[in-house]
Length: 314
Image 1 (cartoon, rainbow, N blue to C red):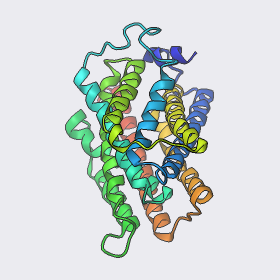
Image 2: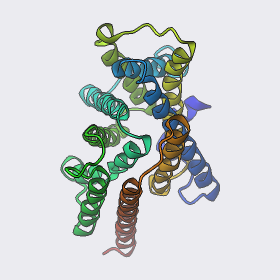
Image 3: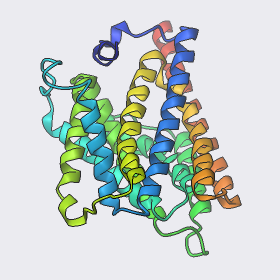
């Protein structure tokens, strides 16, 4: 079943206006976001006992090992064949960089702070989509992007006793993840989903293994070993659910639900570390989420106008 979904061509997707398919997609993406919140919560816990690069290795080693059960060259013919190998490598390296920056940031930031900064990803995608994909944006969306960045300033409060400077790492993680999303879109029309998934985990595993001998500490606590396994498992399950969700519902329908992630990160931060979102984080989150929703609204409005013009022949 899973392989059929991952390898299904676009013309076999459910209709965009199918209400039941949309509900399934929304449910799946919400479940994926819970997985990602669990992943980052466990990663932050592990960083208190292990070097952060060892935690990154555990995330990719678990992901790669578990994914081999479903995605491997022996059961999927032509899995390693890619029409754009350098783009595949670049995409995988961007995801790896995003993970490294994020895990180092989580060592010092509250979960809710890091997650809110990550909400800037759609704005960064909009900025880079012009020069890389030819998808230029108008002044209204530029205004939404500027307001969104003001939300990050409210959270970080540079020079005013704001949060830890590691917030800069969260911003770098956001930029790397945005570029990763753009390269994913560039590969979507030339390589299969299974191929792209396989390269993501393979390249990340190899890159994380290189520095491992220099930072390795043998985990003795069974709970730490369990946590190392779970960061990989939650990463794999989360990405699988995310992919399947987009098979059932359009990205424009799913995108607003990404902002529910703040609930799970705030809950994880409170339960695991006793962290409570402060007023600046909440205010910044409100600004960023409002700007993000407006950006989504403008995107849908632009597509609707384009469809109308196509129908009327203008």
